[in-house]
Image 1: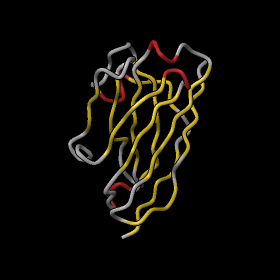
Image 2: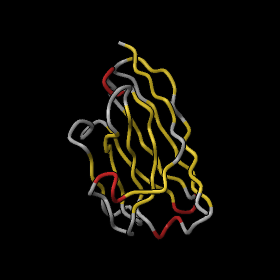
Image 3: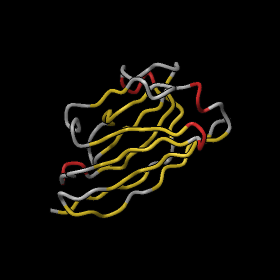
Image 4: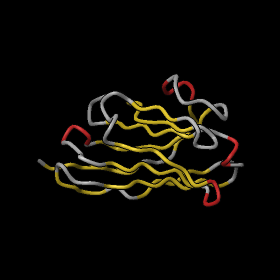
Length: 125
C-alpha cells in the first residue's frame, strides 16, 4: 500500500520562499505522475501543479505559474514543490497525490489518488 508523507511546510513572510517535499513508499514511484494540491480554510481543494513520471511534462495552475516549480527525484522517491514569491493567498494545507497514469498532469482531483496527510503553509503579510 502506498504511503505519502509531506514535509517542509511552515510560516513564511510574503515574498519569501519555501520548499515542500513528498516522500513516497510502498509503490513503484517512478511509474506514476505526481501532483500537488492545496486547500485553504473554507475552500475546495485546488490543483497546484503536477509532473509526469520522468519529469518531462509539468502543468501548473495559473495562480502559481511562474512562482512555483514542481520537480521530482525518482532515486529518492520524492517530489518537490519550490514556492517562490509567496503571497498570503497561498496559505493552505498542501497535499501531494499520485497520478492515475505515468503521464497524468491534468484532470483535477479525479485523476489523482491516494493522497498524503498534508503540510500547512502559512504566508504572513
